[in-house]
Length: 282
Image (cartoon, rainbow, N blue to C red; front, side):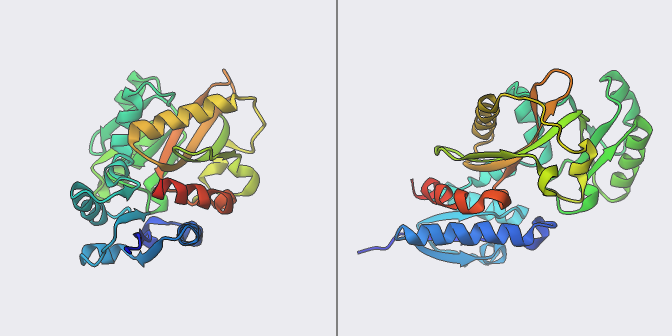
């Protein structure tokens, strides 16, 4: 009798800035939950993908290196189930994600996609954007300089110069939204959804969550947030997801500012892992 074999792909530490232990923990708990359901789980690194050393009936993983994504796409094209889809992971790059969420008319900050060699000030003025977030457009965050808060148009110009000098050709610019920062995690096709204030638990990367300050508890519609996140996950093709949103201090609306493939689930990983396992084998 054939035992169902699932390959688990660990995230390369380069793509877990300040969260390597958290990403490893959710990977381990997911593998344990799958084994508890009778699956054989073989654990691999992203480098194993590049060496064509992965063999299984299905794959779950947290890979983000472009080479890994291409390997997974070839496996997926051959009919192997992959969670999250490698094509969905690619859509979570800053530029495609921004385009897709905007085109789907999901609540989102005003955004621009601009060449870093250009002066961004005229485009910012035309869009009536002052303070903003500047993000490298070509992939996932790997370092502190990949996402920068710019308090003014002149500050944005300086960030563009730095990115251009560093070889980053394109940037995504999101207007800065004031209000409460809320982080969320979800697993599509299950009842699992978790939202919290990261400033209350000091959960974040590079201290950027402190820009909006401590959460004030601005009232928002939790069901609407869950529905919006499910819609965004569907647009991107994600099953295991997370992200960030702002509850506006002017109109109380919730707007998505980031959406990620397979985050750490750090404050809720023990609860999330069985749902992720069900999603993988479901």
